[in-house]
Amino acid sequence: MKGAFEVRLIEPESRRVETGSFDIEPEHEQAAQVVGLLRQFMGGRPPQFRQPLPFMNQGDWVLDWNAGGGGVAFASFHEGGQPVSLCVLLSGRNPEADAGMATGFEQAVLGPVLGGLQPEEREKLLGGEGARQVILMLPGRPEIGAAVHLLNTALAAAFFRAVAMAEGE
Image: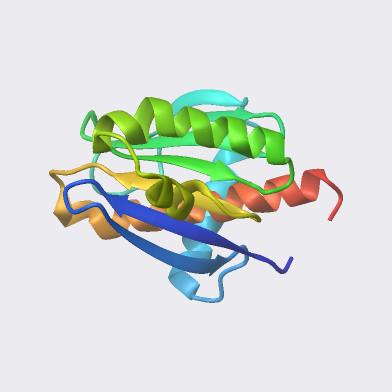
């Protein structure tokens, strides 16, 4: 399956936003393996759950997942009992679902953590079309930042593939 999605990652201390485009079927071997593990892990699970990640060899990793209708979801990764990232996944397939999830993420997560968003910040983080993931990295654990980024991106690849497959693509 071909396709790509955009990732927007914000670090709250600096309010710096990193963006990148990632393939739903990554070519990089390590990324493809992690995506495969997350696809396996997610298979057959209900729309809402909180489960440890059995494939993570180091640390105590947990995924808190909540998928909604219209190809949207909210996820948080936890390590050692503490949240390390919060993210929203917007498939771009249902503008109303995307808008509702984006507004909820802004009001419940980004606004309180960042002290509100300016209109241009909101557009940069939550606007646009197509499949996209917005990740808020929580401060205090820079040593696991690469793992958190990889897990979030792999989760998005697994989710966006599942949404496309459910729609017969």
